[in-house]
Image (cartoon, rainbow, N blue to C red; front, side):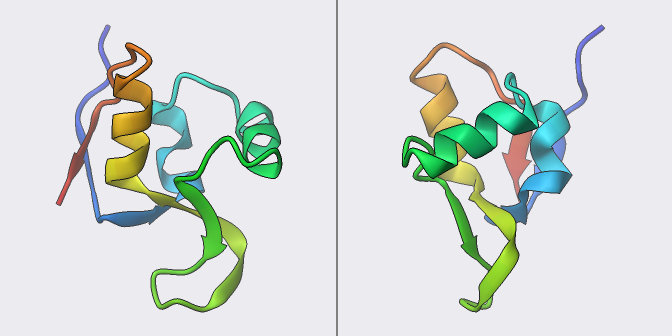
Length: 76
């Protein structure tokens, strides 16, 4: 069964898309701490510091596409 396509804004919270990613939340946090997930930031779409992780959706899709993973997200 395939995952349906999800429409997301250009900057979206990690919580909203984590079920569509081929990696666990813990692994994502580890990548971000090591600086290997440049598409994840702790800055809200308003440009304010945030406790929540935010994702640049197009950069994330490109990141995984370069590694052969198809992410079922569409930027709205």
